Length: 219
Image (cartoon, one colour):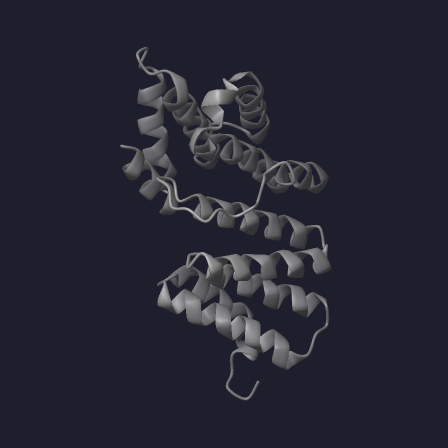
């Protein structure tokens, strides 16, 4: 079940996640980590399926984070995932200072071990969410530094799932930084390469539609 849920998360199939989580948290025999995990999923998917407002979900996430058993929350990085959700919601609401405050509460030190929940993959996702927030805040130098960290850790941990996204935001950030056309082009072309390798069709379409001038061969 957990493996199935994590796959659905990757595919952003929040309606399915919501129905599963809704059933699970009604189960009175469910307790400990599993209860907290499905409660987090219930409100997370509830937000993305427009069943709950950001205000309601933020309240529930904060309550979960502050009242749930610390011992249980520390298992499999559930605490980090809850805090990441809080940060993302504040970013969506354009309250970037609070978003960054919560991102900075997360320990982003990468671990040299493989675990059930692929810790490094979760950390890369959190790092990418932080990149988007920094860019929206127009903190361009911090965006570039965080993107570079994302690329570095993607290579170090041999996880390419988000490296294209980091290169894409490096391109966007260097556009804002008024870097040379050649340098901007390099980042966008690298982003496109990884999007194509990973069959990220939506990202390919966005990149080609918005940044075509940087993708032509004479850049």
